Length: 250
Image 1 (cartoon, one colour):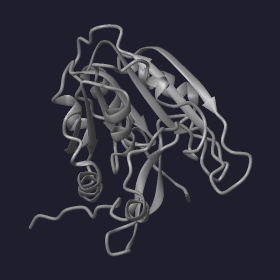
Image 2 (cartoon, one colour; image 1 turned 90 degrees about the vertical axis):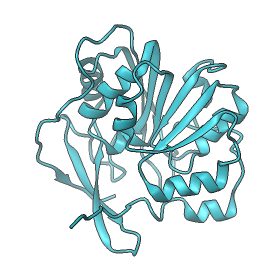
Image 3 (cartoon, rainbow, N blue to C red; image 1 turned 60 degrees about the horizontal axis):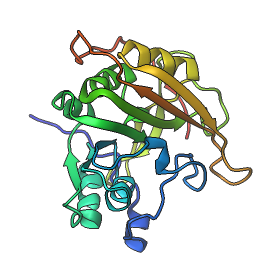
């Protein structure tokens, strides 16, 4: 008998998709999605091939495709529900936006040296073991290509990020509302630097973007940037070490 895991992203973004079907005029890299730098973080992507890793409903990818003249933006997400939502919202933007329903790491492994820029805006880099994702991303970048990650600087509860590559189990809901958990990696700056280096990425820089002064979304953001500045001799395929998860609330 074959069983499939429930789509834990089934409910995410549905209320907004009903009320707002527009292409965003701007994207933000902060946790609150309301301040901080915009698309300029990616550099000039005119004529470039860009990949959004864990694109969700595709809003950020749609913004880049419409407003920044790339050759193509691939919006990749493993959730069938999120992919269907993205197709409904932005499936008409086929000239520069390609919506891809796939496991992000597997997709990257099949796209060696295809991308000029890859980014994860609270996307796949938060919910995939970086010891598997980052080597695949490095291999999928062309030499000189840029990887940008926006991720939590600490847990929204205020608890410190992890000092090693350890995931937390956080609450989630299945399609029928049944309780579940999903993995999330909330790592300290030096840990991101280490896993980027181990993946073959260089020139790693990390900025801390402060959260808003008040309100429910107070977490700071780590903005991680790294480049594929050298050829990799090893395969992007990597088997993460076994780890003991920590259980967290949202």
